[in-house]
Image (cartoon, rainbow, N blue to C red; front, side):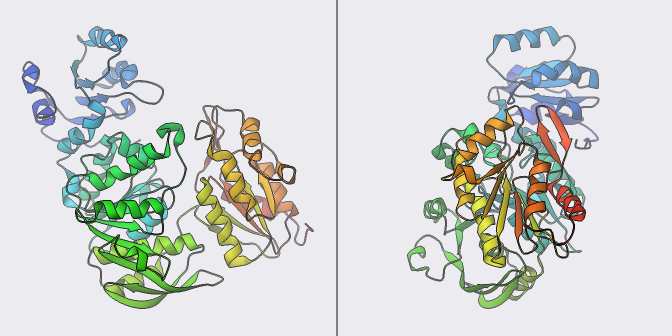
Length: 518
């Protein structure tokens, strides 16, 4: 829950809503001033404005009684359901109710006005894509952070200054919380911030009044079709980041099919830096104004040795991150730094110093026991990249423990299995966050994607599944535990059960006798 931020003298309704609705209809209440604003009824306080919009399972108005009890003085709402109108009528003697058509898409601007447009005071970089958003965001923030001007992050691991993140549970928070977080960063002296921007957040207008300076695109693969329905709709949502008014520049992955489409579409409107892990960029030169690419790269036990070519200098650096996808991530970071006027030599020093992000190819090593790697990979492309990274750096027997989330895109489940089958020597399918689905049924849908389903070992109990791998793998093997990464809970029904893959793996490794045969 985000701590409250109040405006000392309040902000009048007409100032928040002018141009967003017919303010003449506000005449009886136009000069009402509110001291705070929230979209979550749990964050309300005395004399607050409550923005009530439809959610996945309920409408904000379902919590308006709680809003009244918390001291809120005004509720903005929208919706065509006649029952909502009746609910508002019943509350009109307790709280000022104002209907705003299209409120969900306007909430970002309302919140921006309340918090005095905090993004104007930041060098703000937005990162979108299916995989890699968190890593790229944190790597950029690590490089931009300094004592003179700290850098903030908004995303999956939390919001705040890079070394002091407050968890939110969302990749892109609500429109109000985004503006609130940006305002907090400004108050804390941040000069720059990096924000993960999800397709849901873009589609629902949560960042429509955020002033980004640079937009970064990592890649596009199948995910979130439970929400978007089609890949076309999903890709259109991602494109919206590059259409936000005031955006100056873009950094785009030219190794990605959709990335090339984006680059060609927005070149001319924006300064486009492309990046590529291939040295043969002849066919890519028409896509971007400038290209950052790896002339050569060599995998090592701990990462990569890379020779890079950029419009601002060429050079060599060592990347202490595993996986070819992290080479791509590092090039995205380098392009972003150069675009933001960080000198080439300084950018290279920053890249050599970046450290892994929690739950992203996180290594757990114990003497004379199998190596464990915990990663957040939860898409077909992501888990294939993680498996390939293990083979690339270790060349050992690979055990992969994974599942798929319930109440999410079901079409990707067999695709996840096919991706793992291409690389893993041993496949263990288990529960991820089953939520309100039958975990056994999810496992069956995953296994149906395997060419040899009988080769997989299955168990709905994630702890037992990880334990099976730890017990049976040889000390030379590598166990990849994929899907949950940094998460500290497993969601079963409506319950959040404490469960961290990293803690479970360490405990099971400690319990294993050295030298157990696989």
